[in-house]
Image (cartoon, rainbow, N blue to C red; front, side, top):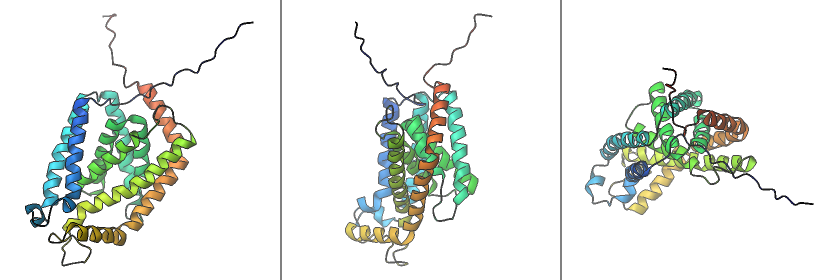
Length: 282
């Protein structure tokens, strides 16, 4: 009688549409650092600084810089392997996300595009997720006429949103209800985080004379932080809650089917297999 050991096959590594190289990682870190400064400068600049003295001009400055840096990141990621199959996938998902955004525009934060960004980032990786989030927000702004100084901030924030889903643990092994619960929890928290950082982008535009929750360039950081919290509670809490709830509901209900479709498409696309041409018959 012979004993045969049974072993489980090793888990297959999940294919990525874009594999980030050192240059892409450096570019992402750079644009993220500038983005943090662009969003959080009211809390980073002392009241006596020139930046605080130009509170109405600073968001425009950061918006211009972010446009250039997002373009640099997209170029760096494309150099590291954004092939034709990945570009086609990017176009389909960005168009779908842009079409989903206007569905609930102006209605209590009903924004179904967010759940698609979470699931796409999870399956296709951080590099693809960042580019997808940025491109989708840009396309949806063109579609809805929402182009303004806030757009670069929206592109960066949505890029972070989708990239963060790709950085969650267990991309190659975690499946089923546990994965859905994790993605739903991330979507809930990230929906509030997105609303909060976007509040930071628009909050300095308010005149301190117009409201006691507006940014005051002459006030200390602690005072402005209290004003910002009050501003978020008064203006966007209900909207952010609606966005978070819709993201959770769509992730739990449509998530299994969408994840299967994305993973099937990723396997069939074989992003990491180079395209070759058979010239033997010539």
